Length: 485
Image (cartoon, rainbow, N blue to C red; front, side):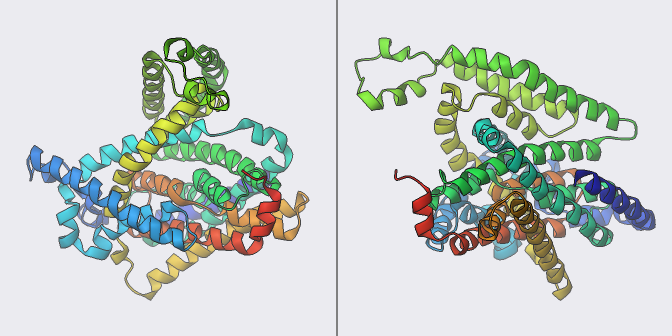
């Protein structure tokens, strides 16, 4: 399967480079003034634009933008919850609602001024780095070990099939929707990765809401999503390295990435296990007033890390993110990998998951949604042709992810109903897809119009998941499969 996918990708890229050659003259002509004029507010706003308002006004606008996105996200999340949708859909839509697509540039600028974009972008980057660290902390290797064969086969089929279809779709999208200076190979690889992403936290939330977390199907879905996440983020790291590398630097980026992964797995992981084990002992029980209440005793101990432990973890997180950024891949990969090598059942993982995650999700991620909303220009999709292309992207993404997962699951021994439910679950994209798309836009791989289309694809495919699972797996079956809590 993998060999066939590599062969198909080689043929696609070889043919696509001929399209790039035809596009060179137009790209050279349009990559200066026109390309800069079509970049949305988040990219166009630079130091000159930022200097248009003073520091106090910038702080006021940033605080107002965060408050507006948080409140709008909460309201929309409640509304979408009544429709059986995960809250992240409302949070994503909140950023788009407050952006120029729906309110228009003039009204949107009152809430999200273009001059604030660089500062909001820094907060968004920090929020995403911290968020990816908590996602890494929640990866459970034991889920994969128990179903290693089926999880590996299904998860990689759910990556290979949409990856190849995304690269194939790139042949048609490249001439009109790639960024001015993007090479076809980089564009095709990015489209493949963007089609292959599964949102592990959104999937886990759907399973929790449906009472499927401890069922056989739910466990297999989590196993596949965990494997999918690791593979997809490694692929994204490779694509970012290819996109950022100049001639002759590709080998350096690839070697640096492999060396970093090897160091994290072989050196940092065993070292982290020994260090976090020192904080497992219930020391707070001796220093705090007596609050040993039987079954409730372990919970306070899990949240009682010493200050030096918290500081050490944050320093390691920043250094890991900085290392991957210096190598030439994105900082989020270093944060994610550090979280993955820390034992998920340790006091460190439990403390940061329960205390850092809510703060990041409530305060910092809204900055990311606002930043994404400023860059999402749905008004660029003018005419029936653009919406047909958007529909084609949604169709290819859904068929690739759903079909690849369902067929592999059926071959692995699941019945068609369970295989289809697993395919629907793996089609969840949500926030993870937005992170990937922002990376592509920052690197200049995709155009603002394609960015808007892909954001709509992420929203639609995620919204389809809950109704599809509800149809394929009745609630009664969910309750029978999951023990009472």
